[in-house]
Amino acid sequence: MTEVVIRAATAADAATIVRLLRALAEYENLLDRVKIDEADVLRDGFGERPYFECLLAQVAGAAVGVAVFYHSYSTFEGRPELYVEDIFVDAAARGQGVGRALMARLAALALERNCFCLDLAVLHWNPARDFYRRLGFRRIEDWLPYRLDGEGLRRLAAEAS
Image 1 (cartoon, rainbow, N blue to C red):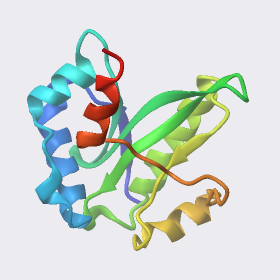
Image 2 (image 1 turned 45 degrees about the horizontal axis):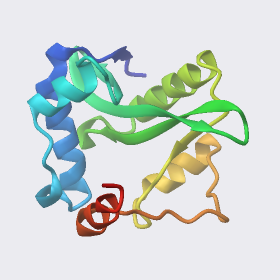
Image 3 (image 1 turned 180 degrees about the vertical axis):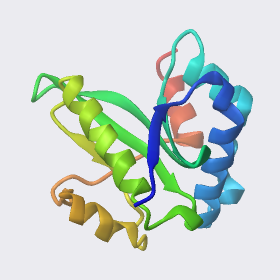
């Protein structure tokens, strides 16, 4: 089996993080929606108030996978949650245990940080859904995602003025 090294990303990895996130977006046919650049990664991942953390997966010293995650909080549980915003493994590195190693490290971090769960969202067509099921993830049937963005977000925020 291939040796996979999982490590916390550093500010020096900003270009690699952007490259891997762009590869994810290309895989998801969403590349035209990607706006993140190295400055965003440095500011929001390694700045004064980080909004996310990042793990990199390496095989033979090359970064072939990424996981971007952050904490949220469950008021019902009274404990934090670990939310995986993005996880991606280069196509050439798939089937070598890279994704599983990333997910195992995320699960370990969740337990180390007293999180009660590890959450993520998957596009309905993504074959990785089977991978997540094999790891023990289950689809949450009774909660539906909602989003407020763009003009709707600005319109509602204006009411706070």
